[in-house]
Structure formats: C-alpha cells, structure tokens
Length: 109
Image (cartoon, rainbow, N blue to C red; front, side, top):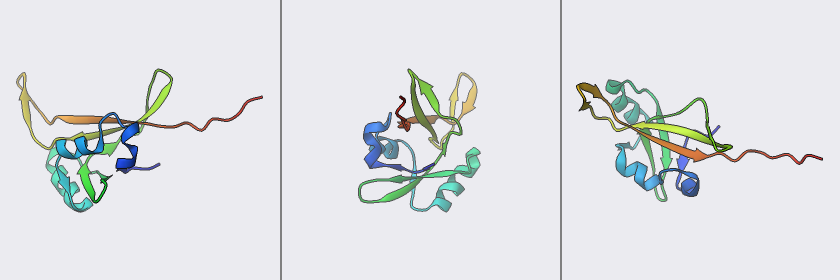
C-alpha cells in the first residue's frame, strides 16, 4: 500500500499532481505539514512526488477504496487549511482525489 502520489500517476489520477500542489498548501517536511494541519484536526501527511521535488501536503489516504462502474479507485482527501463559512456553518473545504487502482487479474480456465 503506497501512501504517496507521484507525477508518474497523472494518467490514473482524477486531479493532476500540479493541480493538487497549486490547490493545497505544501510543506518541505512531513513534520511541518502535520504541525500545520493540527489546528484543523488533521494529523496525517501525504508525500507528493513532483518532477524535480518532493513536497508534503496535509491529507490522508482513505481506508476503503471507491468502487464505481466495476473499477476500483484509491481515495485521498486533502484539506485546504482555511475556514470558510457556508450557510452559517464554518468548515474546512476538502479536495478529494481518486487514483485508478489496477487489480491483479488471474487467468481462469
């Protein structure tokens, strides 16, 4: 189980790596990302491998995979680390990203 996302996976991601990095705050170390996410209730970080650098973002890989149209997807959630008021409710917006997960196929006779 891989908890990092790489630019190599762009064709399997619902949102490209560059779009993720431009949408959510990035940090040079895992510790810095975890410390930034703490006030928002997030204590996990995911490594994003860009073409020439590795950065950390606050977020997590969901425990269960998404399944739609007979295909499996790994799901990730990344908070935008800001509070927004919507309809009288204060919340932290979240970017959801899915990665296509290849299943091992076995030949059946």
